[in-house]
Image 1 (tube, protein in one colour):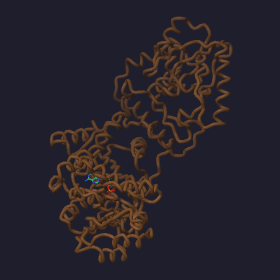
Image 2: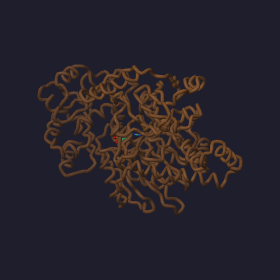
Image 3: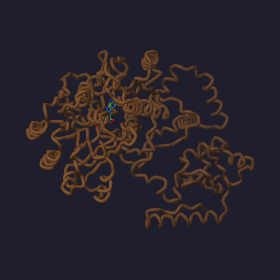
Image 4: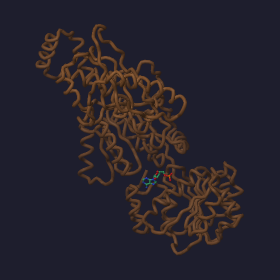
Length: 606
Ligand code: AMP
């Protein structure tokens, strides 16, 4: 884990680099950075035994950037990576740290990219080339790339290059660089051929190895979830909803991420806060106090800020960003399972980070089980349990005398059954957080889309009044709205007594506004005082809906229903004429045909 006593400012970095680091949100150097940066700044060669996730990219990129000669036009640094993805990633990291170094140019070159484009780019001034061995060798052979002025060479993930059969290319490239160059070799493991390359081509290298300590973490159940990038936030919300959670500590790398995630969670009703190095001591203590006294349930923290945190109610630690090293992991998960309790640790692992996962398992001598993503049914079951508990708690602890009389009065007034009343009230309380899975849905774990996370809370908290209502997450098997045909979907079967004549009305809210049949029934029943059994068929289209209501509705009521709002959108209820209804039916049939025939259905209004 990062070393608190060291800051980036203690290195001989230009101010522009320190500004960029502050902007990307790095607080302190990771262990590999703390060890490698002084060596590389000093011009010495380096062997760094480190894997992805340790911060090795910045460990070489920062000192390289600090030592660049901006007056030189020919490439002065070459970074070799095993894959094009890594080449792109490393080039992007350089670009991001160099954002305040005017005139800086980094060029990724890899196979599969247009040669013509690369040749043109290589004619321009370039400071750093990041490339895959095969393509770099091609350019050397064609003489479209000269490494005669190279000052530094980095072999990134050397063992991976070996495994991919690039040893020959790598040595060819090394042979085409000046002997005076500085060389840094990073590798997760040190197989013999890599040792030999190091022996032959590196001069008196400093060797850095981030030691893996063995620690006991038996009181903690450890699981991992293979998830990366943007899906991590979805995974986090799903965990918050499905696990038996008291309080959660979520670890991320940057202070920017602490704030972003805390804010996104707060918008979904979670009591969450960020804990990072920007907080002064008083703010930090206040936040921890809030976690202790249950004003906060989810804390998003950087390693440094969470150092020494001791709050027994932390039931879960989520490693949202993988820790830099095993020591960091052990420290993080040690924030749970305190005071004799058992804790749970969940690690998000992107494909590239699997090696770190295995390294942690080996070092801690504990298996980390794959996590089963919570299913819809599990989430629904959880919600039901929480709902029941909330109701029982209210019965046990609140003075319900007034409400009891109100219920009696309502039951008597309309002659409704008390069970129906209780059911209606339960529905009203839970309508934004459905307690049932859709009939016919299987129990595969849902995969929420980026824009559509499950929106759970624990314990259930009040939803902000103006927050738009969404009934349930959209899942993989439901087409997103723009691909959905505008045809009718009878969301609610007609249950209206047969002797009642119905009139079809149109409402100006549909799928696009997030409307569902339940919302429409709820709004009409509440606003017009119509018993829900008299609300007939409802069809929801892309941006409007239709609803059948009994004939002879009083004019004032219809006027009132025109003005009812769903979020920001007015219902604007209007009666439909027969030709309109017919047109709509034809349009629906047509849309179904179009949908089958072409991937992009036309969107029409009747
Ligand atoms: P790497 O091992 O180079 O792939 O880096 C892993 C992740 O850690 C990347 O997302 C980096 O942006 C991030 N990172 C690297 N150094 C630091 C640091 N000192 N503080 C916070 N995040 C960092």
